[in-house]
Length: 155
Image 1: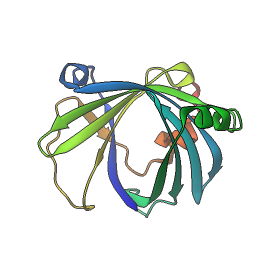
Image 2: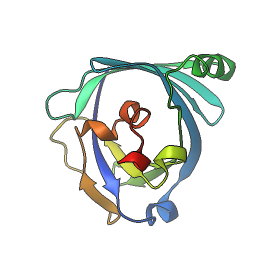
Image 3: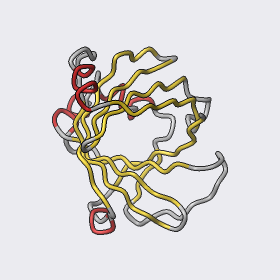
C-alpha cells in the first residue's frame, strides 16, 4: 500500500494526441492534515475514497489506501468536504512500460498541467516524453490537497 510516483509540470499540449483515454474528475478533501489526507473522488462514473499518509523526505513515496464506493455515496461525501473541490480532466498516456497521468486543471487551477508516473521503486528509470517539463516531486504546492486551498490562479 505504498505509492511511489514522480510528478512533473507539462510544457505543451502534445500529450493529448498521445492519450489513450481521458476522464473528468471531481474531488474534494474531508481532511487535509499534513500527516494524512482523506480524499473523495468521482472519476467518470466511479466513486472512490482514498487515504494518503505523509510523504517520505524525497516526496516520491507515501502510504495510500483506496476503496471504490458508489457514485451517490461519493456525491454525498463531496458535500461534506473542505472548501476547494477540484475539477480536472485526466489523460492517460502509455510510454514504454509506464503510464503517465496528466491532469488538466479547471476552475481556480485552470492553466495548470501536471503529469505523474507511478513506479515500482524510487530509483526506477523511465522514458521521458518531450512534453514533460520541470520535476516538482515533493513540492507540496502541487499536491491536490494544497491546490484545493491555494489555487494556481493565486500564485
